[in-house]
Length: 186
Image (cartoon, rainbow, N blue to C red):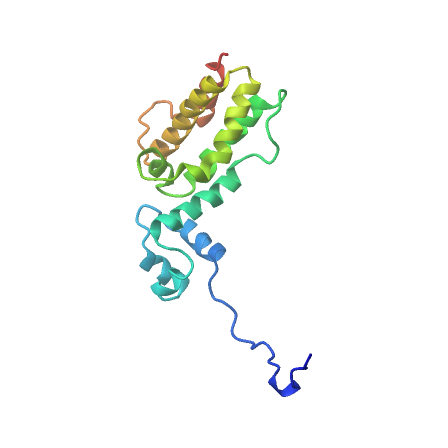
């Protein structure tokens, strides 16, 4: 076996560090209004050429999917629901959805009415279905409860964001949670 002459060995070049990565791109997108987000506006915010973004994401829809994945990770409670904690787990989940989606203009409304890929929310759905089943619902009914629960929380968040609550006294998210959880029967 022959050895490679020392003068032909290459040392890795030290170049400048990458200015972009997916985490930085998603973080910048989260700071923008997702309803009006464009790849060009995002590139400007990051101080890069639009073409540089396309090396990391295929386009706006993939970017919004990545945002959804990031939010899902923030929303789902760390510990899975148990027979003792299922009700509190659902309340924590609702509060997290309200807080995180409410902090990003247009995202709750997008989930309610716009195109989205449900796969990024599958862990949330699975956790909620498991919680409803721990509360006594069969699998089919637990899925239906999840749809009602998610629609109520996202709908509330979307309407609240738009400032369209004409109620007097002003509506309180905790009242929604109380109604949802009191209305739950197996």
